[in-house]
Structures are given as structure tokens and as C-alpha cells.
Length: 489
Image (tube, rainbow, N blue to C red):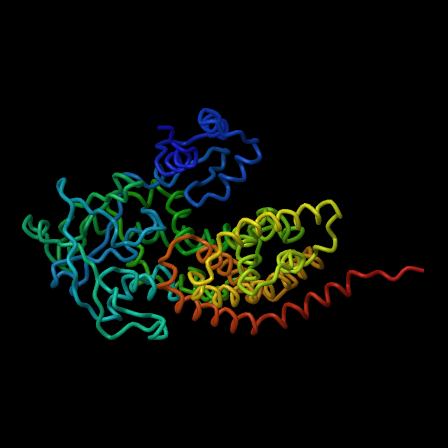
């Protein structure tokens, strides 16, 4: 049986064990029958979250960067007393950022540690997830199968005082002498399968004496703090806290991926220079007490937002990458549900500058929509779409409004620093989140029905945030547009 090309590419990205060149990647694609240009390969690799570009033009996968590299953490007293450790954020950035921490396979002496569900107070559990950002902690905890009875939509995204957590039993370690205060040492042995091998390091509990390991660990914290501060100045705020940490650890592997390592979470019990700062509607690591800017010396202002991949401090402006079919399909289903077929209206919602398109391009896009409509109208099940349709409509209405401002900014500005920074960040985040929501709703996965209440609440929050920024952005866009006119005689 022939294995589909996308599966082979995915496996390559998730497991290739050494640096590779653009030529290596192109050769792989050629071998599996995928015809691409060099530019297409560059664009794919530069947008792939599991690939990093080295300064010499080579590439590495996350699997290569983080496999067999040591990291550690110390279970809290509450965890130890319950006979478990809770993974939480502690394996960040070494494991796949797309998986839930309770899905990691922790292995001790060749045997997987058993999962043990425990009760724990919400504040203590939140402390083990804070690196995901305050805005996502609750969702990660609620996604644990042990908390399947929690309905965040009904609780307004607030956890009950006592929750459950899937912990990993430390009984085998305790039998071998592991005690409270000792460090659990980890290394990823199979990044693709989320397998982490654990051991432990006995720590002298005397508070009055430091040994050489303690000194080395204190130096580790100094290196991590300095490296993070440097990354803020050089790289700016990345697309997530996880990416910020990943780049720092990759750039400083020789000093940070060592036997006597500390943990990222413990750094924040010591540092007074790094804090968790608001970044639009999200959170980033940044200089303590300082606002996180959208534009800085780390990112040369792009000429306009229509660049295929403009990196603005980790904000990915993919606004004008080829429009995905799921977005067209969402608008078409919305119209089918309302028994209309106005393809030009869809074009204007997705492409506010549709009127600028050449006649040939307009006709091609309208024909594409008609063809998609003819396919979808025969497949559409109004009964099956009954619950999703109103939420989809709400998302598309908000998308059209957000998209209009994105185009306004693109039309008038070559200097994004002229716009208020936090509103600009929020605009980008809302845009990205909307596309993600629309894509989820257009998937065939029936599980989306279980999250419609949460999606509605999320849309309500995005609409509230959008209402708070749109006037400020429109005002500057209007000023920029005015400044762009030159009176001639």
C-alpha cells in the first residue's frame, strides 16, 4: 500500500534526527513524487512550527533539537504526599507543544509510570500550568480527561475550588529512595511518540551547605535569565511563551541542557527581571513591569500586511496567503443555510479590495465559488448543521469586520509603528483565533458540538475586545490615508 505524501512529510518533520538542508528536503519531496519549487520549500519550512532555521541556512526539527537533552523539576509537597507528579508545563519546551501534558508517556527503568487521578485545589494546580499563559491554563486543566465533568461554558471559565488531575505515580521511584526535595531528571527518548525517560537526583536537604551541584544549578538560573532577557531584545515577543523558551534553549543548549539543570518554573521564584506581561489578549514573558511592544528593532517594519509571511514580533500576518477553502466553504454554508447564493457578497467579505481585482481574476474566483457551492449544496444537511449554523454565522460576521480593518491598515500604512501597539496585537490575535475557530467548525469532527458553548463565549469575548480597539485603529488608518494624499497643481 502506498503511503500518502503528507504522512511521509509529517513523519520526516516529527522525527528527522540531524540538521538538514533545503536540498535534502527537496530531494525527499522528489522521492515521494511531490513537485515543488525551492521557494515553496522555504515557505513551508519557515511556517512549520516543528522546524527551526539555523543561522547557516540549515534546518533542524524539534525532534532533533530536544531529544536526549536533560531537563528537571521538583514535585511539590502536595504532589509528593499524593504519590504523583503532575506534568503540567514542566516538559516545556522539550515535548510536542500540541499535546496535552497528561498524554506524555513517562518511562522509569523501562516501564511506563501509571496514571493516577488525584484531587487537588485549583490554585495549586494552576501553579503547575502557568507557562501556558493565564488565558489558557484553565482550558488545559479542563481538557484533562479526569475533569470531563467540568463545563467551562457554564462556569464562565472559572475552575471549581477542588479539581481532579491526571498525575504520574512516583511509587517506583520512592521504592528506590526518591524523597521529597529530590529532583526528577528527564530526557525525551522519542519525540514523535511523546516518550520521556525519567530518573532522579537525590538532593542534600541541608539548608546551610551548598555542594558543587547546587553551585552549578545556580549558574544555570543565571544563564537562563540572561538568555531570556537577550531574546527579548533580539527576537522580541514570539508567537507564544513556549516558542520563546524553545528558541532560548536551542541557542544555549550547551549551557542549559546539562545534568545539573534547574527548571523554568523555579526561575520565576528567583528572578526580579522577567515577568508575565499582557500581550494583546494573551501573555508573554517580557521585561518585568514593561509593556510588550508589537514593533521593535527585532522586526524591520514590513512594507505592508500583504506580505506572505511578515513576522511582527511573533505575530504572524498570514492575511494574504492563498485563502483556504474552509473559509470559502464556511461562507457558502452560511448562505445555503439562509437559502441565498450571493457569491459576490462572499468575495467582498473575504477580499474587501475585490473591486481592484482584474476582471479575469474576479470571474475565476466567482466561478470557483459557484463550483464549490454546487458541491456543498448537494451534501448540506440542514438538520446536522442546526447547532453549528448560528455560531458559524456569528464567527463570519466578526471575521468580516476584523478583515475590513486589516485591509484598511494594509492599504494606507507602510509603518506599523504608527499604530497603537496593543490594539494592533489584539487585532492580529483575534484574526488568527477567528480563522482557527472557522477551520474547526468546518472540519468533519462531530466533537465540535461539545465545544459550541465555549466557542460562543470565546466569540463574545473577541467581539468585546474588537469593539475596544477598532476605533483607535480606524482613526490612525484615516490619518495615514490623509497623509498619503498629495495635492498637485
